[in-house]
Length: 80
Image (tube, rainbow, N blue to C red):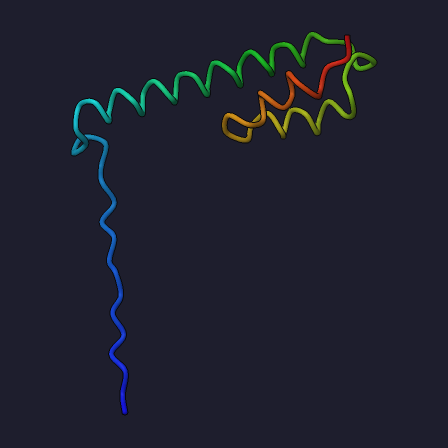
């Protein structure tokens, strides 16, 4: 007995093909993400190493991870 295997093909939607509200959402989220990352990297660059929990290099790499990296840095990476 043979089985029929069906595969789903997914078509990637281009930005220009998105609905206007989806374009606005993507641009807003991207702006927030970039702003968070830029602010976190600027803080990390100007903060003395003794006021950072762990390696500055490690935190610079963590900050690059979507929204979660900068938020984690602000919550766990800085010493008062």
